[in-house]
Image 1 (cartoon, rainbow, N blue to C red):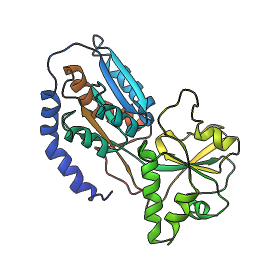
Image 2 (cartoon, rainbow, N blue to C red; image 1 turned 90 degrees about the vertical axis):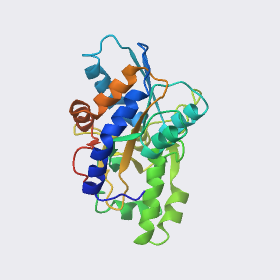
Image 3 (tube, rainbow, N blue to C red; image 1 turned 60 degrees about the vertical axis):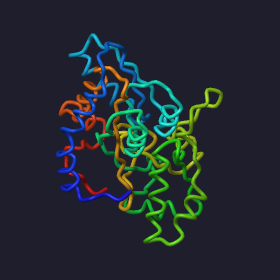
Amino acid sequence: MLRTPFHTRRCGILRLLPALLCGLLAAAPASAETVNILAAGSLKKAFTAIIADWQKTHPETPVSMENGPAGWLRQRIEHGEAFDLYASAALSHAEAVSQAGWAGPAVLFARNRLCALVKADNPVSSDSVVAYLLRPSTRIATSTPLSDPGGDYAWAFFRRLEASHPGAYAELSQRAQQLYGAPPNPDKPAPSASLLIAEGRIDIALGYCSGMPRGGDAPVKGIALPAPAPLAEYGLAVARKAGPGAAEFALFVLSPSGQRILAEHGFLAVTRPQETP
């Protein structure tokens, strides 16, 4: 995904925001029903906190949230599943739902860096992680492309490494195991990346920095992937049939309070300068 410089992108967002907000509100006929949210799994903790904060001023509006791989959630919407608000780890998914007529305008509401998860005593760092990935003996785990944007971002990283490491994409895409982020299977729950590493089944797992352990004595640690790792861009879309509560919640996510909560959970707020990972 090509990105324009942040000052250009930010100005564009600011110019479009009034129209986007009007579109969100226009998409909402009068209703007092439950706000049903379909949100990326990486948003679970942050959105739980945002919902709790929002309901302090909207106690009369119930909120229901289901989390899962954002690509899988998009497929469910495209097959006619009812929803009020869709929050994807890929802006392109929210834009597709909007362009198909299921929702109003899609809006960028957060960013996320990509990190690698390894054992706490592994000496690998951001400076050495590419060499570690390219080592033939390194066992790599990623999320599942198409079903989960986390997998798409990992594969994009592999492709970008081609410029400085010819053959990297073929090597890494063949060796990487897609061990999580697939559509849920109640009969075979996917193990967590932390468990896979702690048990010694893999050496490194790629994922979002927001989901990495923070301090403490965890058996695993997160390290930021260096450039040219892509920056994940999250998109939000309100269903055209949603009630006003969904539009009001979307506006709260975009508000300083919502953005603060996202930042507290490891996301990059869209109103802050975009940093090079």
